[in-house]
Length: 238
Image 1 (cartoon, rainbow, N blue to C red):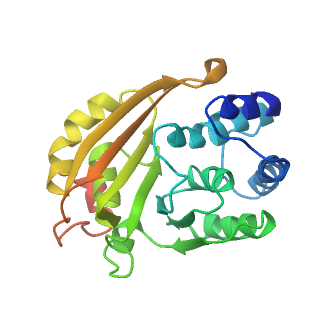
Image 2: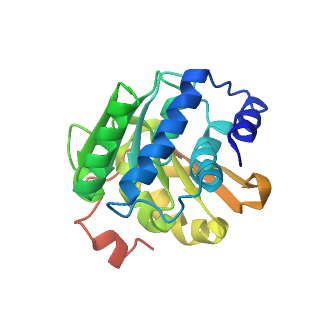
Image 3: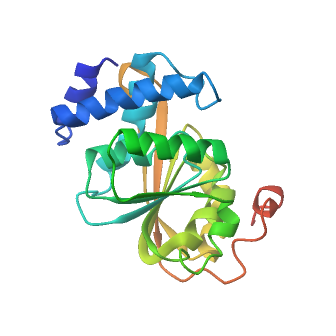
C-alpha cells in the first residue's frame, strides 16, 4: 500500500488526512525503521507493508467505533504504538495512555511522541495485570484496545478491568477470532463484558484477514481480577 493508496482508502471511509498528518505518518515510518535497527520493534520494515499492516490495520478500528468523540483510550501492550498512535494521528483530540511491559519500548514511544508533536499521550512501563489493579486507572477508560497481544480469554482479563462501565474493549485480531471468542465467553461475562459486534474483513491488496471484536463493559469487574502477573496466561478463566 503506497502513501496515495493509504490516503485514498482512508478518505473513502470518511477519514481525511491533512498534509501535516501525512507528514506525521512518514516520520513515524522513518523513526520506526531507525529504532528497529537498535531494538526489535517489528519484523515488517518495507514501507508499503508498514503502511498496510501497521498503519492502515491500526486505523481500521475507526471504521467500527466513533473516535470523533471525546474519549480516553488505553492501549494495552502497544509495542511500537499500534493501534493507538496511528489512531491518535488521525484524531488528534484523543487522550491516549499506553502501557507496555518493556522499558525499551516505552523509551521509543516517548521519543516518537515528542518527534511527532503529539500531546495528551502518556506512557507507562508496567505489566497490564498490575496496571489494572491501580486505583488511578482501573475502570477509568472509555476505550481499552489491544492488537494481537494474547488470546481473548487472557486479553479480556487484562483489558476489561481498565474499561469503565459503559465503555468498550476493542480487540484487534487476525483469523480465528470467532473460535477464541467461544473459548473466552465465560471470562468476558465474569469480567463484566458482553460481545457487542464482531467485524471480519480483508486488508487491501491481499494483506490478510482481520477481525475486530467490540465488547461492551456492562458491569463492574470483580476486585480479584486481574490476577497476579503471568497467571492469566498460565491459567485462563474458563
